[in-house]
Amino acid sequence: MNSVLNYLAEQPILTVFLIIGIGMALGRIKVKGVSLGAAAVLFFAIALAAWGNAVGVEITIPHYIGTLGLVLFAFSIGNNAGGTFFKSLKQATGPIITMVVLFIVAAVAAYLVGSYVFDMDIALIAGTFSGAVTNTPALAAAGESSGDPGTATVGYAVAYLFGVIGMIIAAQMALRKAHLDTDAPSPVTHQNVRVDREDGPTVGGIMKSLGSAIEFSRIRRGEQGPIWIPSSSEVLQRGDLVTIVGEDADVEQVVGELGHRSSHSLRSDRRMLDFRRITVSEPSLVGLTVRELDEVLAERWGAKISRVRRADQDMLAIPNLMVEMGDRVRVVGPTMKLKEISKWLGDSSKGLTDINPVALGLGLALGLFVGSIEIPMPGGGSFSLGGAAGVLLVGLVMGRLGRVGKVVTALPNTANLVMSELGLLLFLAQAGCNAGGQIGLAFSGDAWWKILLLGVLVTSIMGVGLYLTMRHIFHMGGTRLSGLLAGSQTQPAVLAFANGRTGSDPRVALGYALVYPVAMIAKILVAHFLGGM
Image (cartoon, helix red, strand yellow):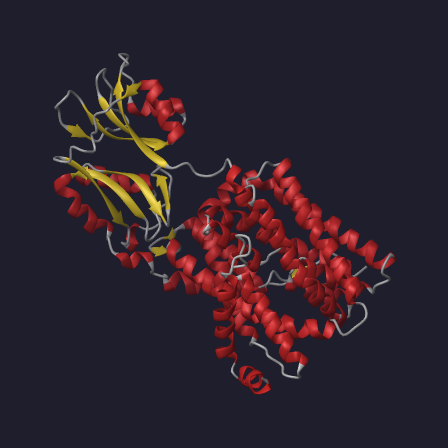
């Protein structure tokens, strides 16, 4: 086997893809319904490198491969979550502050136990803290402030493994309650309603009074009258038949407000008014809101958008929703005009996979620059965010903007998912190989069990603390909590596990992106001060 290991050591590109292939095959194996998913790539890489190190063969993957994978992953996650991240940020002040407080608590516990119970060197304590929260920039800060990066690295390598496994266990616990989530988006539905009111309410007035996200997609006056798309100023009369589109609860509320359900279907009469799913692939329209598209559709063709399908999720076409490349919009309009409307929107499958090289290249370059900026530290020294955090921040902003002038800054949801998975697998293979060799050296000393126990303590404080506070104080759903746990750990392997268990539910990515930037900065600062004590 030595000849095989030597060959792998000489062929790092071949090795990285071999690790990805075998690791993912192992990750699909389920034990009592639970599988590791992409996290298995990390563990397989660690095992392979440790095996090689044990027989004198050093199997490593070049650092730049891991960096490439990590920045692709971070940009795609940020770009995908940008549209919802900033809206949710105002509601997440409490969870973010709680997370930072837990980092401080975990660091204080590590210092007290490490110094007074295990009699460990401060560099070893700071490195163990960094490994327990699986953060390499924090390790760099700990090594710099302690003046002993080699000792800090030993603590990091031993504590890192449970840092991943422990938080995966916490994520699994969170997902066990996911079926009770109250923040799951309700399916969008439609209902035909017969108007019983005689006071002449307007469509806009009804929508405003209910405060619900609903749409009036069709109206017919009289049993055999024409069907048209009502405007917000349309006055409803007794006997009108209208089609309401929205989430179940909102639609039921409108039914009770206007009249009663009707068995007559306006959608079945497609002689004059019809609907069609159309893919948005015209670059000039990407980044516009539904309201802006509706204005053009109404003026040119008397049509409107009633729903937006992104990935596997159907959403109501609320006015402020920004349209992304590859979205499939349901357009209601005159039957004879739908072909023209399709041509205007693009209706090409290319929109589903266009990686938008201009936005991707500029975003990655700008993110790496932001991550390299040195930020002064109180009391001397400095730190930088690192490429991953810088790229994530830029990706969030670009995803939120959608477009700057004629330049589209948001990538299609599908392209983001593909790039994030590829980037994640590259990073896990490289990180696992490098950690595997270090773990073999670390376990050759006699302090490994102290490091391991201290790391378990730190990871447990974070995992248990976040689980209890988010569930019982902030009442966060299990799905979003699993992403938040991964984000607080700044650990793609935990995110991969949560995505694998939920089918890449968008709430997982939202929870991850919500805390990742703050977690990155907080852990660097805490490790810096801990190492300097």
